Length: 118
Length: 111
Image (tube, rainbow over all chains, first blue to last red; front, side, top):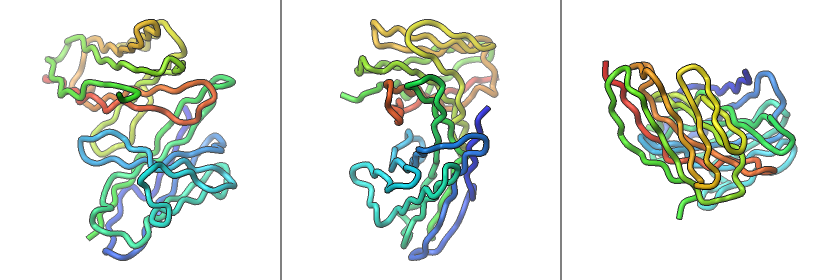
């Protein structure tokens, strides 16, 4: 099946530093990737839609200057958490779509990245 | 009203039981329905994918979609402790790139 790889799986950083998380589609090209955030025992919260070759679309309430998204190729999207603070500590998950029908998509997820800001 | 409603549980069942997980939705444009399983501290894993109404079976798992009632279900037969996870329903409309998720139901299968 389709595979989406995410790296690193966990990272600890100091407050004020920046952290980059990579999301790769391994066996298919993804013009669109999605970034989610998940707090413990809560569901996925869509942060932004990453579009290859263009600017990401951010959900309401998500700071685009804090969460920088770059989708430079059809198989790679990156999320950079800039000037991280302890409240940014969370589980970040990416996903990529795979068209199963002409107008439909199913979404595969990466393994997630645990970010802890100390 | 949320686009997708899902009972968060938690749901505890004994090993071997039949589990029924459900979601309701309000958008009649949804045509694609998915169930994901998420183990603790892991990314969601696609379990079942269904297009439009009907049933789909894969091993111990059966997905049902009733578009007239805007109601989808996932049944797990002969549940195992390894089925203990959070199950998320998700759905999308034709031409849309994004999914709408339920909040997830936490399931524990007790040996």
